[in-house]
Amino acid sequence: MDGADDEVREIASLLADDCAQTILIETANEPMSADELSEVCDVSPQTIYRRLDDLTEHDLVAEDLEPDAAGHHTKVYTATLDRAIVDLTPDGFELQLSRRDRMADRFTQFVDEVRDR
Image (cartoon, rainbow, N blue to C red; front, top):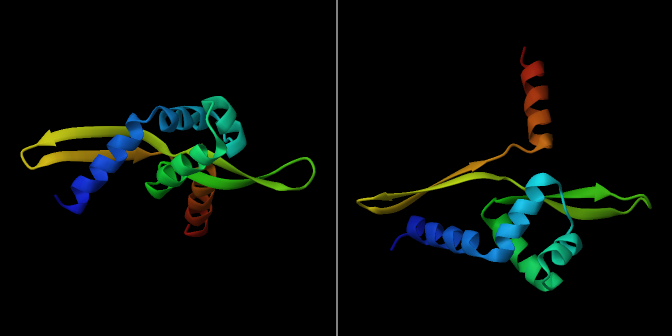
C-alpha cells in the first residue's frame, strides 16, 4: 500500500464519520467556532478539535479569526470541500477532491489580476 492509498483511506474514513460530516455540512453554510460545532454535533469540544485537526490536515476546512463585539478574536472554521469523487481503477481507488475558494483567496486573486493588467 502506498501513500496515495493511505490518503484515500484516511479521507474516506473521515468522510464516513458522523461528526466530521456534520462539521462539513454546518460550516459549508457559515463559519462556526469549535464551541458552536460542539453544541450542534452534541459531542465534547475535545472531539470537535480532533475532527477539526483531521479535516484541516486534509484541507477540508479552513481556519480563520473572526472579531467579536468585545474586540476579541475567535477561531472559526469553514468547509473548503466542495466535492469528493472516488473512482475504482485497476490500480485501486482514486480520490478527486474539489475545494471551494475562500473569500480571502478570491479577493487576493482579484487584486493580483488587477495589478497584472
